[in-house]
Image (cartoon, one colour):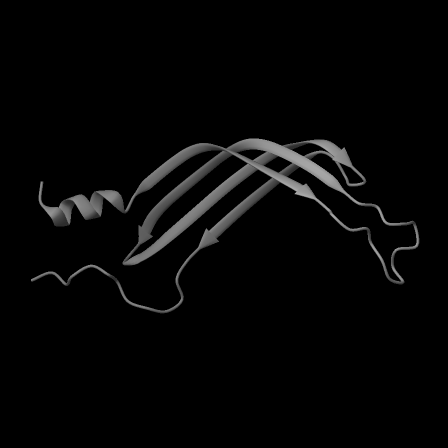
Amino acid sequence: MSMKMTLKALLFVTTVAGFAYAYEQVTGDSGQGAVLGGFEGRVFALGPALDYTFKVGQTPVVTNLRYFYEFGVENRLQGFAGFLNVAIPLFGHSSEEPEQ
């Protein structure tokens, strides 16, 4: 397998992994909108993640899907959180060398 074929094979990548996040508000809310008090919030979350990278024509497209179960919540909404990201470059050129 040539180096060029190896690079093309790497352009279609799928990754499945576990993900986590933690959020802790270290100072209370303030200002005119804080009519109910400081509400220093906290949340922890765990869940699966799926990443998929592919090409549309010569344009690389990166997608990320995350789904989290939140726990240990204080002064915040509790439940599930889902995120879908799609990244497509707007400018630039392909890093591949032209065919000869």
